[in-house]
Image 1 (cartoon, one colour):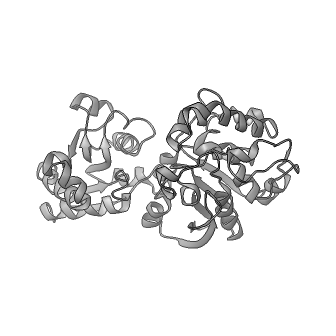
Image 2: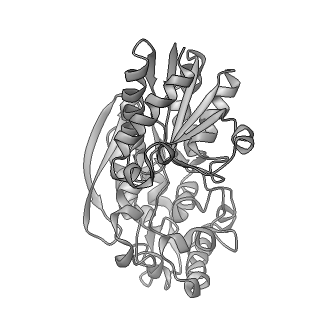
Image 3: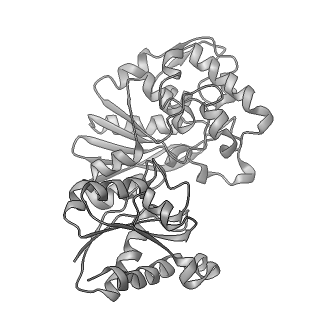
Length: 365
């Protein structure tokens, strides 16, 4: 029997690569004769480069870039042929700053532009930028600055949303010239526009730490950026992805794409599914949020098109069998149910491995 193992990250406890290995180890203990195909997945957020490197190989280019508050942070660019993959969260991810130290109005995205520049300098003809897990909310102004955009003497593209207060004009010409011969892809699952009640600040700002009484003011700062560049682009689908990084990339000619779809295509998930007898996905939690745009939903959809059963392993399962099947999942199993919540959190790899071993009793033949 051939089993495709294609999980997402597990809520910060396990990367997708670690989760896939843990599932495989447990499954092999129960069914050593099964052929296990490990294809860890992602949605364009933290871990994108690790996930793709595990499956595609390629070269990792180590770079040091500007972090959300100006200090240096390590980053990497994955080069596979003439395509480069960049993980924006490496430069301005939420995980880089403890909750109590976050200053979302001052967090900038300059480092993301530096990652893109490194990819271009390395010879990439296509640069895919994953936009998940972002802690900045500057409309991608820092990215534009890093790539060469210039502003009037009173304005500032660096320094987060707060730096946009005095903005009067922006010249995008140098930035567009920097990426003129490159195909850019903004990979994120947020379809929101940049501004307004459905925009990035209103919808995702609180999660980045923007105070409720500051949402309107921050949105107005992004409005200033849009009015000095292109308001029509600000209304486009995906402009609000990544705290507005999607907007900046769209200004430079990027195409917007689903993060999980980009990963699935890059690793040829459909091809792996057609060669499998069973598809196993997973995530930290399998609940009502595990719908469109998530790894479990996407993996299940690919399995359905290949006419293969799909099951899910998770830390916890909070939906019933009827809801699972609507999502395309035959069954879902929780490590909390097997070893208890405390043990599951204390040893996520071991508990997931034990869950996979138990699940293989039912599904391996």
